[in-house]
Length: 290
Image (cartoon, rainbow, N blue to C red; front, side):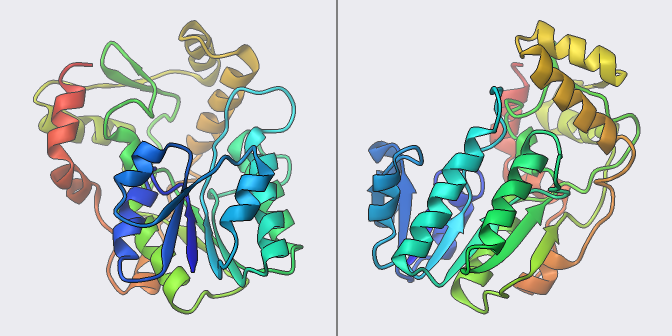
């Protein structure tokens, strides 16, 4: 049996249909969202180890996709939560865990980059079979505008004119499905990107064409961007970390593209234009009123 964590999120909603016909169970917090998935589901909470352990009974493979960086004192909560999943998988005799991480996860990294590295190290030392998907930024972050920073309806950032090879979550799901149902590629890490790298000014122009109004990209120096984020309500330390990560992206660290999506799935990675075309109605409705 396959257990999918994060089944109702940006990746999970694409993954569950791809696993139709397999023995799959979704791990959800909200029964109402479980009902919408069209597959068996169990209710649990990653902060409740007993519920995680119960969900692991009879499981062979796990998609570990859960949590993100949040304002917090000390260790990111996602580290504790994902360790709980890995430890439960060990106890249950799970064969393989496919973990969704981030590109450039590393020791001492800020926010999600550092947190995912700690989880990756725990997984590598667990004795479980494992493979890691390390995606670039999600195209879906631009779907409604709620997952990016905006001001007066325009994109806000500190990327300069650097390019980012955003990847469609549908492609991440396709890669996960390949590993969960076929050769799990034990011990391998796959950096997932789209087929092109775009500047945020180019992205704003593409969003404008779909939304039917002008959307600009407003670029700020990292320090000014951090100040703007605190004005939007983020804690100072968290805002500074976010701004520092954006400044690293401005150096081009997310600009390269890879062939990993095609290598794992047999089809080319989707373009930003394809993403916009398929989600045009939601994008138009969301961005036209921001």
